[in-house]
Image (tube, rainbow, N blue to C red; front, side, top):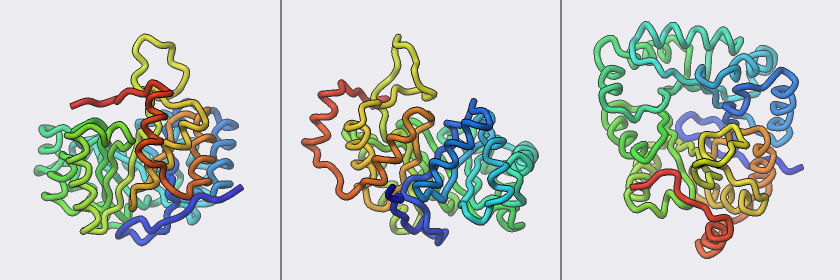
Length: 288
């Protein structure tokens, strides 16, 4: 089994696997399922875990591993709170659940709402706590994440106001065929390259929305399931220099994503991706 390639995670200096384990797939996992998933990611050389208190039992499932193997992983969690006290309380609960005294990265969860951002960045806001946590060594870095078509634009605005260490936003082939999103994402990527800020990406294998279909996977969007299509989609994202791919939030599809990433050599051309889009009947999950 090939290991997934590693790349420096921007200014953090950490050599992270190009695929970051998105632990939302452990949201409802029992202990045995979680152990199997964590063994799987380790077999591919993944050394970077992204979790959040909003991911159900994920922090609880990761905690026993962190207790004994903390030094082996770059560990990131999040806060979705807007005030100092609420963020502080939530984060210390995360440390307890993760069985560690610090994380490497603490991120604002989905910072794409302007009124919410003003509270976070204002007096008594959550950013005050995250800044103090960084100074105290409870987290080494502070980042922002975002979902939806406004994420890159909002991240650029946030970066103009505070020097965040990392960003996360959606990226897949169809999204970059959406003119508004493509312009904003490319502007964000350019800014981050200049400032050595690593860019994490999500939704790499989004097929479309569920609509009235029966939901077969633990994702709010419908993920690709065909091995060849997943491989093309994963390779296309990895072909974007400097970005990291956060893995899918579904345990059934996860092994296919990891196997595809481990076999990455070159990205598919646009005409190859167009064939996949047509054959699979893919649709954008966000539109202008």
